[in-house]
Image (cartoon, rainbow, N blue to C red; front, side):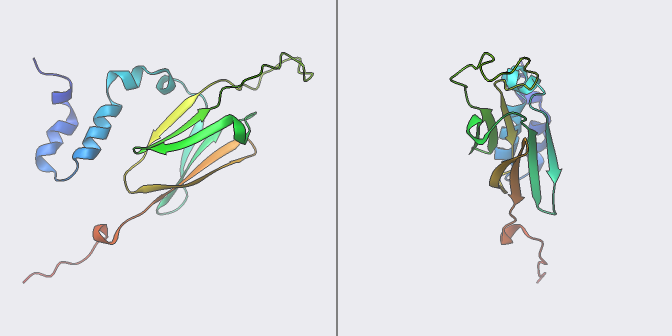
Length: 150
């Protein structure tokens, strides 16, 4: 019996590529059933944008109204940037005078897979918008150059 893994487009590309195995493996992990069935993947909360800010720079913007710096955690590990809400330890129950709470501060985890040549430059929370800044670093060995034919 042939598995879904063996039928993937990535395995079809492997015979005609060199050195892309880690990239294909990363995409394979992304397309596994567990990834798509995870609650953090199927939710649209919090809303976000991915913005190209220059030739080699990007921002991931997340709308986090009501969250402060201490309410969120941003991590980078194994090619994945993860933004996660920090568990609230106290419940207000209207003690601050709030009659109706329409601005959600619910728990969330949002992850973004980034390429190996992209560096996380920092994160800033300002006016309810979290901006994670990224930059693609192209090493000299990968830059275009002319090869002399002898």
